Length: 309
Image (cartoon, one colour):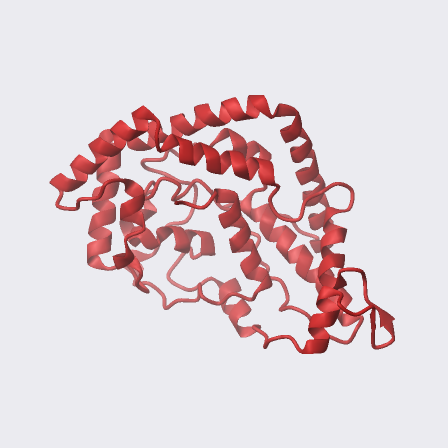
């Protein structure tokens, strides 16, 4: 089952903290360079879900992740440790709708089912994104025992200086939530997001759309019961998209266009989310206010906010 979009965004942002380098793959040939930008094609540009108004954007999560690194490192430096790799300068926002319904954007035609990973990583051309290369170069060895104790607060003092409650990890998070903010995505919007997706799979209109899409795929010699099965086929677990993958993704896009599946699916989720938002209006208003506080705090720490796609 697809993970909620908010959790995927947090995972991408958290990659900054862990000095992820897996995105630094060999470049694609120029004719396979993924296009990066708002979703286009079967998912009309700008189409979104109501709950997005109550969620951090991926770019905002990146800024918060960078703020955490800066705060954590200041604390660790006070005890003689270098801390995490410096946060990336990448503050690029991206459209979290891309890939929600499998192949649903034009980039899948040129990058196959690898497109989502290329898009999220910020690979706009044939070269690996600079932030991924830098993160890999700055990757650090496992923490020493003393460093771990200062990080998690299992000691009260080290090197003649007091260690904050919860260690430098806890101290950084406290500063980010000071004033009523959040560290990472709040639970309620993410739950509504995931629930609408799961419930949409049994909506009669979506089920009928799956059947029409599946029949279209079978006509093209690529039988799958639903779009998620095509998108998660283990055969696509390769460094670069294979010719078979590209052909399947193009057939997938064509069948989505022929059957109108993506708008049907999107509208089913929109209806479900609108009902949930009406039910939890007061709670979501409080969540949104807390998120705005978090964005202000993280932006103040880093001195920069997210950038557009």
